[in-house]
Amino acid sequence: MRMAIDKKISLLGIIGIGLGTVIGSGIWKDSLLWSNSASIFSIPAVFLAWLLMFCAGLAYAESVSMFPQGGGPYSYVGGAFGKEAGSFVGIMYLFGYYIIGSVLSFLTALFGLAAIDLNLLNNSLLLTLATVIVFVIMSILPNISNYKNFGRVAFGWSIAKIVLVVGVFMFLIITWSPTAISIPDLAGFQNAINSSIWALLGFEVMLVFAAETEEAEKTLPRAITIALPIFLILYVFVSALASGIIPAGSLPEDIGSVGLLIMLAASTGIPASLVFAFGAISAGGTAYIMLAMCTKQTRILANDEVLPKKLAGKEVGFDLSVVMTVIIGGTIAGVMIGTNSIWSDSIDVFATAGTALILISAMLPAGLTALVLRRRLPALDRPFRTPLYQVVFSLAILLSIYLVALNFSNPDWFLPSIIIFAGVILVSALLAYVRKS
Image (tube, rainbow, N blue to C red; front, side, top):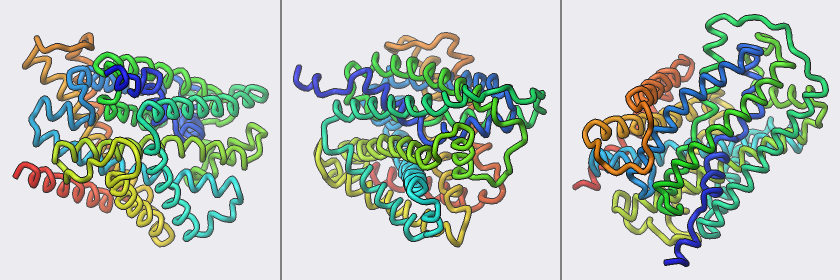
């Protein structure tokens, strides 16, 4: 038993999984967008967004403390509302991260090629191949060792990402000066809050590894409450420095991720190739964790025969769960990027559908689970108890609903993204029904 415990993910490892998932390539450009929307007032916008996400974090913490079996929403929804409901959201959650993992693999390839030569980005075939190759590598890499070592790598990679971000933004201090302070209109301030909230999504990935974590019912809530303040400190830091170089409303609407990183490079004096390389490292670290989660979730669902039993595979090594992740996710990545040359919104469409799947399969059920069980079973053992739970869990539920609506608000890709979203829901429902039968 002691040997089994020694192979489990430590507190630092699970914190690394949370940090590494949230702190991806977005942090290099998001702060510029926040400043563009609200200038120096992006700082209170980030703080308000963090407070709302903290409510969701507390809902996750209490839910996993009651159901620390691993599988994230599969476990806590199944424990609260029944096995069929858990199977349904568990499958949706898996497909959501296949899609988001593909998006992160694309960003890794995009920034990696840009670090070599910006002209390479004009070759759509090369970008597609690079994306699929990154996806395959990041799917296989986490499975060549045990979970404890995976946690160590995740923690080390997250620290490296934080150091790179802080190091680059420190160069802004040399030339930093407050931009002309103007009070943003309500739309600008709200936009800064909205985009700040998106930057905080994803830390719930750590819950999938609960069964592989030491004393998960205590460690995971502790990890959530440690990681969230780190996010706040880091994002306030980068938004404060970004507000010194980006006046409100100064960025063109079509600047894109590559343009934002070029602007950051020009503002810091660091060669653009290095900034792109750092962005690729950040995106790659997030893809590494997300795709490891996909493989783990597949094994959990297969062990409970929600998916075919043979997909459970081995706990380490290359097995059918890894193969399934590579085939399904790699296909999504290839289709998403391969169609981008003829359909410029394809990446946004897939990202919208994947984000919506995660919201309704993980965040919304976490708030509902925690609130319903507090009322139905107040005496249930809860190693972590949220204060003012009526307010906190209600805010988490309302935030989830708001983000789902906001996620589909862009008319340019509403129809195709809602079709993908509905298609995955239908497939998930059918698979859950087959499992029940």
